[in-house]
Image 1 (cartoon, rainbow, N blue to C red):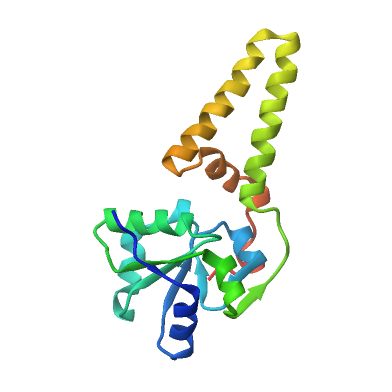
Image 2 (cartoon, rainbow, N blue to C red):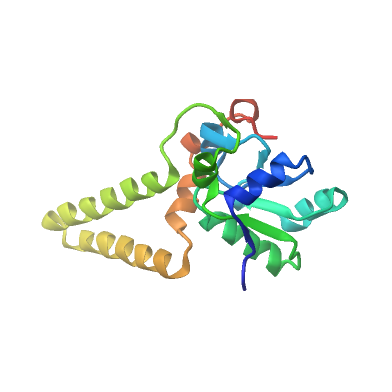
Length: 182
């Protein structure tokens, strides 16, 4: 399944043209709060309902644009739409970071620890705990093996169970008004 993409430079030209665009940011609300494009609204990937979004978008005309931090989650979101039978979706190549570098207008808010860093901290801590714990209690070695297998699975499938779990943690949530979710 091939995902259609648009470069940040092309998106900038589209924004400057004055044509209305609908841009959905699929990152967590806390990531969205930290920095997002002015044209974006937040619908986290784990809450994405392609049918409902396309029904609301139907009258807008033109494609639905999807963005995340670096392009991986927006590509997953596009695939979710295409599996649901909606092909008029486009992923922003390089994500928000590339758009900031290209000079697109952004809204900046409160800083947060990126979900990717949280995954690395959690995985590293669990592996370390497993290794240290296995010194005293032999079965602890399986904790490190489980985390390692999960990381291999995440790399092969381009999905991260630990990331999805961490995205639901209280520190990755915020009040609607606080995060500017529209």
